Length: 173
Image (tube, rainbow, N blue to C red; front, top):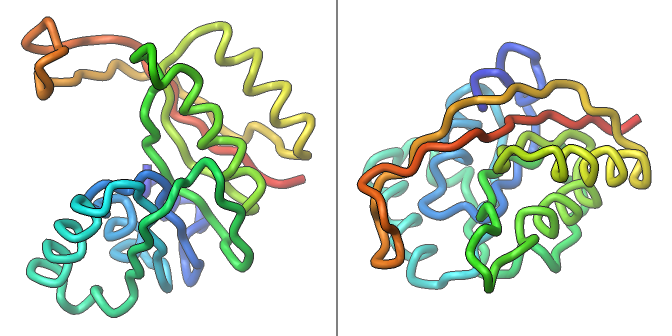
């Protein structure tokens, strides 16, 4: 995702926000390929602490350019953000249905470019088209990819869950 942003010149000297950042790996990758600073937004305070610790330990030369914020990315509208990169929760767990779309709406209201990955479905593509139109964005790139998630949580039933995901880039008109 960030490599594509580097190839397209979308991250060079840009302020990047990573919504639902987890440990901040997309933010760090954005800085490595040329971003000027990164804002990591994560709702889980413990994950934010761990992410900040990992970045200061392993990427100390970049850590001063990363700001972690504990907050709900779905209720956030940022100013002065050039690009949002994110791998939002896919919203497949019943309690999280549609969460990825709420992340996307927030990102589209905050930045002029959005790089994101979502669980692929024809329904998602319809929603994406309506959102892009309503918020004045063009779908600049899409690629359906195979996605593997290893068994991480007790609710997971398979050792590896394989499915189709879609990587998208949206640009403000």
